[in-house]
Image 1 (tube, rainbow, N blue to C red):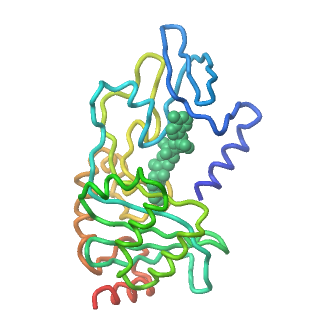
Image 2 (image 1 turned 60 degrees about the horizontal axis):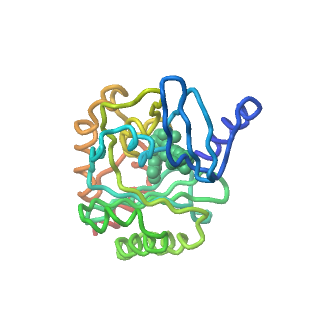
Length: 256
Ligand SMILES: Cc1cc2nc3c(=O)[nH]c(=O)nc-3n(C[C@H](O)[C@H](O)[C@H](O)COP(=O)(O)OP(=O)(O)OC[C@H]3O[C@@H](n4cnc5c(N)ncnc54)[C@H](O)[C@@H]3O)c2cc1C
């Protein structure tokens, strides 16, 4: 889905915009007239504005915040996400399996050949917080160990990690800061105000719908905390579509 959106935006703007792939912004300096960006290939460029849209772990944000300021509010939840080959029994409706021990497994299919898999675990340990910066093989080992006894289609999902075209492992955090700009540098998107993937609303996020978007974005603790608490319990339907037959069957398994 995300890839499709990126392709649409790129196709619509590529004739008027210069895209540079495979290069990071490593640093910048600015004065009242300009900002100079320094890139990972050793080149530099002069610009009117620098927009830091570099995501939850934003380097640009770090550069404009006071030294030592920690913008992350950690919710004690970690998530992994990857693709596996689709099988005949995978429908487009999402299946959710609530697993004892603060764990959750989700799968959904978005095209004829691929199925998305999510593992979610509630864990407040240093190991869990650090794993997302380890090599992918270590991350996959971590997730396989946490879920190997979870039943349902877990073995298939773990096996599929090895051939997935990508593997994301991430701590669920909120970005909280009162500083969104400095001079000619400004933050946008998750870099500025990541509400956490579990609070996302743009596409079919696997979490309960908020009663109002503004209330949700300004007070995620109040709106999301009650739900997160329920994820440690077994058999709690997690969203509107989780009442699908297959999900009930899966939850029944988890409760045995
Ligand atoms: C597992 C998971 C599931 C999610 N599900 C949903 C969902 O269902 N619905 C929803 O609405 N949201 C969901 N989200 C959240 C959503 O993905 C983010 O809110 C969104 O991608 C943020 O967009 P962004 O452009 O601000 O940052 P990102 O998508 O993080 O993009 C940042 C970009 O900046 C690049 N970058 C980083 N550092 C540099 C640098 N120094 N120089 C240059 N480029 C750099 C990165 O490579 C990346 O391409 C999910 C997130 C995760 C992790």
